[in-house]
Amino acid sequence: MRKFEGDELVIATHNDGKAREIAKLLSPYVSKFYTAKELGLDEPEETGSTFAQNAILKAVAAAKSSGKVSLADDSGLSVNALNGDPGIYSARLGGEHKDFNLAMQKIQDAIGDNEDRSAYFVCVLALGWADGHSEVFEGIVHGDIVKGMRGDKGFGYDPIFKANGYDITFGEMNPSEKHAISHRANAFKLLVENCLK
Ligand code: ITT
Image 1: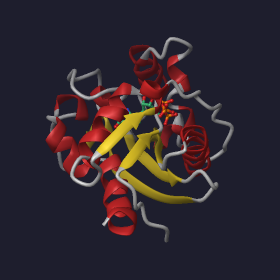
Image 2: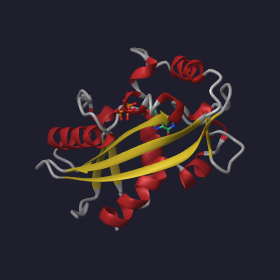
Image 3: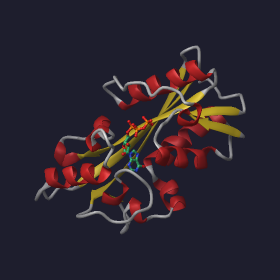
């Protein structure tokens, strides 16, 4: 397993919600980080067919263009009644304008009266180097899709997802509560243990 040795890292994302969460999780371990958006790096097309392939593709592309070790996150919401959709297509369900109210409504409509509202968020983090090497970690959190949308904290699909054992959605949680249990936090723990310590 290759370790991250430097003190500068690129967060290879153009999603502000993710960048905020990753920066918070990284802050005890890395002294300086930039986002791909801040550096004006191109957003590579996500041509992979798995979360891991897309995470590696984004991390290595950012590392090659910035010359710095880069951390990418490929994530999404999988709904069991919809055979795991939208999954790797979660960002694309909101259309060109990334309208997550529309995307959440599409999910509610597709679930309809189905009694199975179980779902899970997946996050795959890839740490990529300019020579093409990468290390990959996956985190999952299981829960349910609530009826309607609740809360305006977080981002993306947070207002419709409630983790098992909780009464409030991710959209109603404070960031520190979400960071204690989220798919991203679970993947991050593995990243820290293996590459950042
Ligand atoms: P980058 O590729 O630039 O990182 P993106 O938004 O295109 O940004 P993804 O392809 O990984 O990222 O899409 C993941 C989508 O899944 C994202 O747009 C969110 O809508 C959703 N998602 C991921 N993690 C989430 C979370 O913690 N809370 C709510 N929605 C989340």
